[in-house]
Length: 291
Image (cartoon, rainbow, N blue to C red; front, side, top):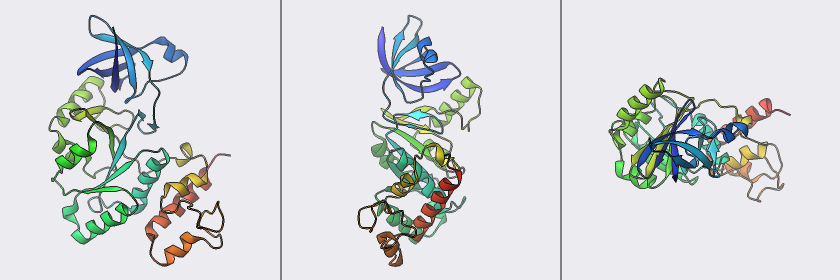
């Protein structure tokens, strides 16, 4: 019998597939190895189911997107959790996440966690500044979870939840669904790997028909692996993307004459921290790019 499903976990050569509310331990057909193609968590697949409830993956459907770390496909949105205290995350790091997901074309939701540890005015200013750029922003206090907001946000989607270490991703996930710790324990026992791994991802049904992938964060990532040219960085900073108001159509907003971005920076229309992040990552790319 052939059935459609989604890969929710991978352990060595075994693929764990959820189909019609049931889970199947599957292997991939040899044709995938022959073609040097590896199924990923998030892949929609057709599986051939046998009487002992094992299965073989016989087809992998076309992916709408994929991310690098860890390898995950068909992501609907990225929930980036950050903090401004305990730990104090630099705006440059926050902007790295936003840049990455803009380039791979995955919508981003920012979650500022541990808001009770910082001044309310700072929280609201953060929310205003990033909402002005078009990002949805959730403010969350340590130990406080806006479950209804997340339930609506994640409805019928595959979401990646990510962010630097220590920002409280696990606390949020445990608040959303108390089974999260149980799932983590089961996965760790099954695969004999630690709870915090950068090598794999697992799809959790955090709400009915709503899946979340808890991924390791990245404060450093070789941007040359997902950037084709420097204009990708410019366009990933949405407020600095070339809207045609500069003198030159290929303006990079650095030393070019009659640059509208440089003029707007003088009037505080744009965040200076964002422009500093843009220049930092542009220089990083130019330094490390491979010709």
